[in-house]
Amino acid sequence: MLTVSRFEANLLHLLYYFLGREPIERAARLLENRMSPPPCLSRPAVQLVQDALAKGCPERLARRGGWRVAGICAAKKLCRAGSGSGRRRPSWG
Image 1 (cartoon, rainbow, N blue to C red):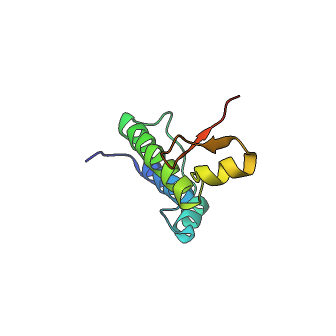
Image 2 (image 1 turned 60 degrees about the horizontal axis):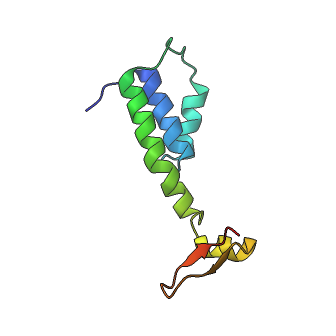
Image 3 (image 1 turned 30 degrees about the vertical axis):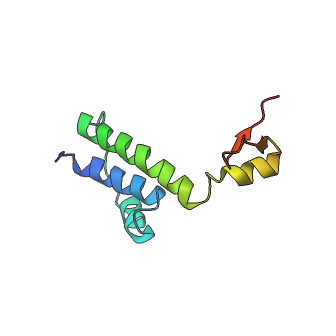
């Protein structure tokens, strides 16, 4: 378990809100209660931010349909049928 300061914990909660994991009410409360920032973030806080972004960004993209390769290929006409695999491949030429 990693320990972070109150400011860093609030910052992480805001990040979780932007990634769709926290309700807006909690984020709004954090924005209303200003705190003075530390000179820099601790190593555990940076590790938690990196972990949240590494897991949260792909999850958010997947939830919003950002990885629908067939739809992107059809819209931009960049794909052609694969060689019997049933998957589409980008056409680079």
